[in-house]
Image (cartoon, rainbow, N blue to C red; front, side, top):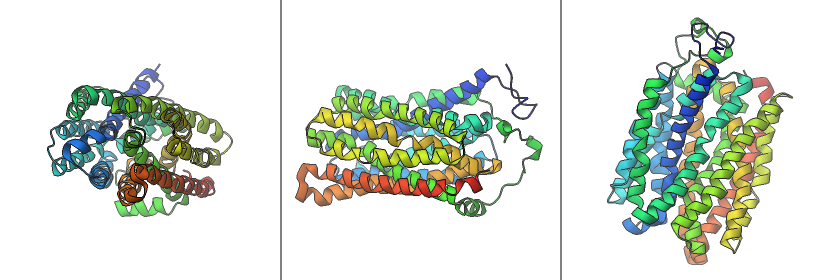
Length: 431
């Protein structure tokens, strides 16, 4: 049934089935986003050997090379998404990063691979902010966290496919074929999205009449100041940044950890990680959204306190993962922090959309991504790579594991602190 009349602008009517189709299509785009991004983690041992790179260079390629322009361009692209067609921006972005992923497979040097990774980052900058904005205009507030949780499954599903399929492609055909195989299908998905997805009017799911949405947009700096002045926004973003630093560092370096410390082949590592990291991420993301929606019925603090709980419980288990002598046990211990820690994601996304105005939702998401990625995407992989190189003389092949453990422990509890501070302010600042 068309149910837009009761949810938004009468002139824009969609069926529940089409609403689910939009969410599903955006989920597919997100899967390609994360698969193309984190596939590199499973390829690192082969790329390192083929191109003769150091851990510091690998840290740059997997971190700063991708993240700097990805983070900074997300904001101006989001401003365009708050003003113009979001579906066109998403489709163009998907086509660009897919083509650049293919070109990464042709790189012959550190410089070439770094340049192509920069271009992948430029393309992926146009994915998440307009997607969050679209979902917020298709789903009412009481269903928005769950919808964003489903969209958030793009990360673990993308990692699952990247690690499982990518690992075996590497063993069978090499890292270059893996990159081309993952990049090419995205171009077809971009065409499907362009011709089948409809842009919802701004504020549609909130029952806002499009004529009541201001046509002018506040300046970027003014928007940032308004959002940053809200303790909820500030601490949610910083809490997400600390968790993101752990997640990115683990996704980039954990395959190399199992290869060096336990001497496993890449195909085997990818298969194990698909089921002990990516699948638990799926479960934790869905559970986080569903639990948060239930907690929200009793007040707005509950979902954010779930974030606190997730980080406090998940963090100590990284010690078991990185210090366990048997690789099977280490993989199995990884299930717990992978499933619990990620529960913060849907709450983070929904809270940021909740503190932003209807007209600045894409920009709010982009500012969140900018800050989180500057901290997690650049600092995480680079910090672990540098620490591993600097401590290699002392710890030998164990240096990578100790570096990961130090980062995960410090940043996990740091993340919990910021989420707790956000929970104390949210009641006064949620729109």
